[in-house]
Image 1 (spheres, rainbow, N blue to C red):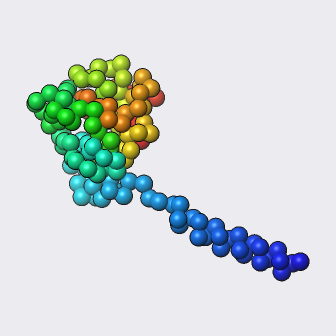
Image 2: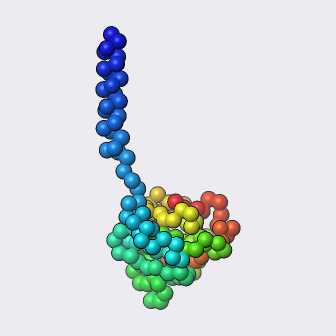
Image 3: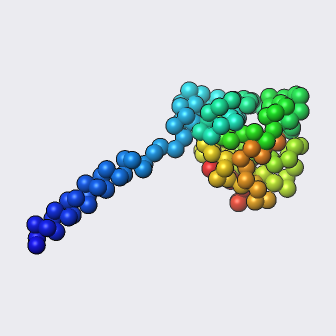
Length: 156
């Protein structure tokens, strides 16, 4: 009986050992690579794919009040297209990126990305302060101090 219990325990551990590597995928592999390539260079970036893949929509150290207009670092079809974003801004002062649901930094709906969070590899799991998913819904962004963001507005 003791041998049977030991055998079952060993079999259970072996099965667990096989199952863990198969399900323990690393999130943000491409975002990690992008972060390692750029580090803290003072910019915000956005991609149309998850995990910082697909088309790089824009890179800027500045603000952009309308991702859908014809001026600024984000233009035209960039509005309502982002699925992953990165905050590689410098730490201190206005080091949080506030992403807005509407143009012109309309504060009825936004989400804030702290510099320590570095990036969001899938905006589909984040929501603006009005409850709407952030995936494919960003229309403007601005650099702000952390105190400008509501406690429930931080994304990751």
